[in-house]
Length: 266
Ligand SMILES: C[S@@+](CC[C@H](N)C(=O)[O-])C[C@H]1O[C@@H](n2cnc3c(N)ncnc32)[C@H](O)[C@@H]1O
Image (cartoon, rainbow, N blue to C red):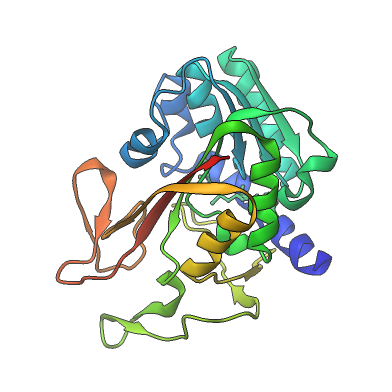
């Protein structure tokens, strides 16, 4: 497993430099006050003022710091040392208060203590995780009784579909149930920026919806809300159309592209 995580970590460390300069992440806008969370994230999180919030897989911390601007007491965690380094730089530049921890999320209990009102993670989280039950165990571990887990991510069926350049359509390419890690070679990251990646190999895991539900149940988390959306937070396929709120839809399709889930620790 370490080999998969080490490969992914190198890949993420390299992406940080490209993402920092990208229009997609718009660091300058963030430094000028832009909130980097989108409408769905804000809606699902609700009022965070005065809450202790742990942001898992926080990347380079813009959303964590946006939550600090909204009045939350925040801690962000990510396994990419480059991401955590940049998150700490942004904390200093903005003068906000935030802690950032560098750790594999599945081992975070070795590096962080404390109880939180909210554990939050969004967009591009679970494909990097081999063991969803352990991820939920970590989330439950850091929640105080009555605390809330809030997650949003690509829908568990996303990995089954790919854009076919020749046919100019989205087609089904893979099974829903797939236990093996999928090895991808991607020369460019998902943002703008024309830097070809050197560490271009990554490993991803697919998780059926039942795994999310069982991971919550098995770790003492009561599911209070599950939603599926026909739009995506990024341009998944080149034939998508941008709609209000910065989301992307696949016109004429009924595919679920995003989901959210909220749970309360009993
Ligand atoms: C797509 S980004 C999440 C973006 C996030 N929504 C944000 O606020 O920018 C995924 C993050 O997961 C992190 N990651 C991937 N595998 C991880 C692991 N096993 N432990 C901790 N962080 C991990 C990566 O370093 C990356 O920063």
